[in-house]
Length: 145
Image (cartoon, rainbow, N blue to C red):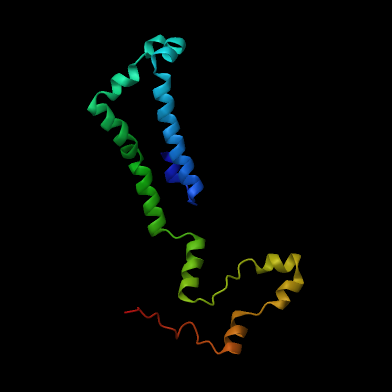
């Protein structure tokens, strides 16, 4: 469950893998607690898991305890994502406000290794002047009705 709070890039692969891991864990617990296998591995374990699951309080605890234990982690994660922007979030906000915004942060690295590519690229000001785009400060965001 902790793994689900630490994933930054969700895809169907990571979701399915997490769910399969949880299912595999519970199936393993059920199989290990069968009479034949538990007598082979550890005789004291025989039918113990089934006795635990027959109690309603234990089932509720098994379901709710991981969620309650992860509440501080989830709270911290949500607070940092909502109130403290990462540099990527800041640049994405600028791009959302001005669709023609281009991040210039790594141009010096590209110029060092490939000087010809920098010469071929137009600056934002050149594009705006050639295509008569309005200045970003004069563009107001309008809410669609």
